Image (tube, rainbow, N blue to C red; front, side):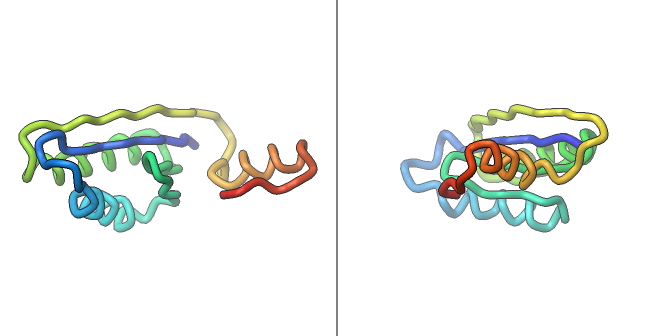
Length: 102
């Protein structure tokens, strides 16, 4: 499984971008992949090809309304591991012997 963290924003829509981000997150939600939204982006867990397909769909959705888009993505690929979206956090909390804010 792979974790993908990405941030995509239109650069030509002013200071308030929530309506555009909401459209992208609808695409993410409808993908059926497990994801977590955070203040600076979104983390999604899935197979490599599914994640790239999702990233393309998100880009195409935003591209319909924007002439300039910033897209940043990073990946963590690990064979034979699933549930990393929650598992990584639980592992760190276990080692620290405490919970952290989420």
